[in-house]
Image (tube, rainbow, N blue to C red):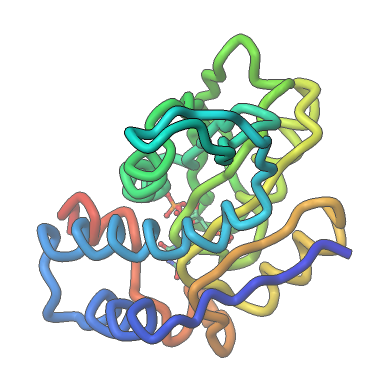
Amino acid sequence: MGKLIVCDHPLIQHKLSILRDIKTGAKDFRELVTEITMLMGYEVTRDMPLEEIEIETPMGKAKAHSISGKKVGIVPILRAGLGMVDGFLNLIPAAKVGHIGMYRDPETFNPVSYYCKMPDDVASRQIIIVDPMLATGGSACDAIAELKSMGVNSIKLANLISAPEGIKKVQEEHPDVDIYVAAVDECLNEHKYIIPGLGDAGDRLFGTK
Ligand code: PRP
Ligand code: URA
């Protein structure tokens, strides 16, 4: 089964509380999503392999370390996942970004896929799927399946707020994918919104409601 890593650093918890607050407007919401993503990025990238290199400092030759292994691809699930892209790009500026467009059908709550554009070399990359909300897990599972159908075999999932139902679904359907979250909330309501959650992440990011 894939690991669940809860990134509960005090700074993340503090910023998450402001993010959830109904009084937090779109500008602050966007900034907080970027800040929390960067803090989570520290954990998401913790197992990146290093290689030993030799460098020359003003004091002479020295052994040092450089990131090696697979190149990284960041894949936001549109729309809300876009909010987490800058946080990762601040840490890994050379990463490429692929986009998956998906929305939840308001009646069935099943994800509907409407867009997919990946870098040509996506199959050889370490992919990090980003989306602030993991609710039923339907969108994340479909996004993972879509990437696997393109030959991707190294996928991590990073969400800010998750529900137990979504975690269970991803772990059952994609046991090879580790999940990084900032919080595991209580449950889903009858509209499949996370409780307490933060409401509609896309609307809060882009001010559409
Ligand atoms: C939200 C969120 C996830 C999805 C999570 O997107 O950003 O993609 O719901 O729900 P799930 O785990 O039950 O699939 P939404 O459908 O609201 O689209 P938007 O980002 O375009 O607003
Ligand atoms: N999508 C959101 O934006 N929020 C939720 O709570 C669930 C799905």
